[in-house]
Length: 113
Image (cartoon, rainbow, N blue to C red; front, side, top):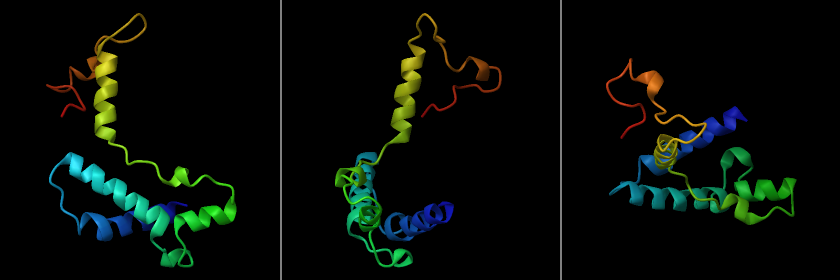
């Protein structure tokens, strides 16, 4: 399976990152969603008998809901920022500052943008 992941990453490099330009983060996420839909549902993969990931999934599980391959791209930076902001709120059993172990090692909190 790792070989499949590496192959997909290689394809994304040449078919998406090297071809597209992005005006901003929103534009990138919109184009990433579109490319992901294209890749999963429409693009035949030569390394997989010229079948799309959707066709391959249907062969293994014919009753699979197509929406499983239609998930949106996830902005992990935004999720991390939201999560760390939530942690910083504190609470009964939560740290009030999730960066406390790093303060002695860095001048600013890790993960800050």
